[in-house]
Image 1 (spheres, rainbow, N blue to C red):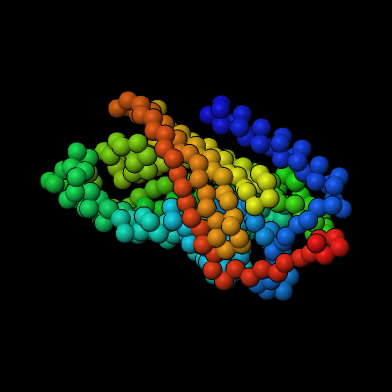
Image 2: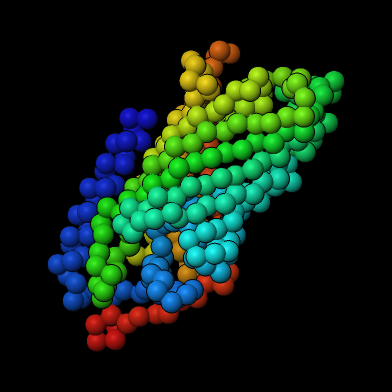
Length: 301
């Protein structure tokens, strides 16, 4: 966790230094910008936006973002989106709603997600995961509700009429909890495999999972963005907890397709011992109905 916070501090310092250099050389800067007008009065959006699915900002109205591993999103109303983890959907059908309540440089949103993990649990029981769920286990209908408060703050706010738009440097904090409802008394054994233990904790004995996290998003160079985050999870505020961290570099081929790659770390501390897992991650994002308008820099370069 200390290493993650050190990286966050380094990235903030480096980005602010790069921002000051960009302002000094403003007249020689060449910038490509995306301005999307879904409805009159909408604000412009960066061509290679540094905002991610974990921030408080909803996807622009009418736009669809399809992700291979992360959350896929659809802007069904201004400042409101419907989202889902499509890769997880066959095992745990899920749907979420994010809404921006207020804010400009500081945006406050809520996210509410419903999961139905029963199909995945039944699949695990009949597959090679019998060390986790034996064939004799009774799988109930389980509905898991996740509720989050998300606050994002732009560290480098700029005037709306600024001719050259620098990518936003965004710091995001989140608080939330999970709880589950089942159609009877759960007879499932505890799933103690890395990231599954705390995510399935609410299946048992009316437990709740509480979590808090922080993320920093910004621009590295031209069409390369970064995101780095850390999350802490507590099961009913007892001695069992977990921590996760993820860092990625996002390469935007253009305004409609991007590739990201990085790492994911898990640490689990429970009554059954501790576990640690480090793994690489890669993701692809496609944007549909993404309208852009290119703006020239000085001397139309």
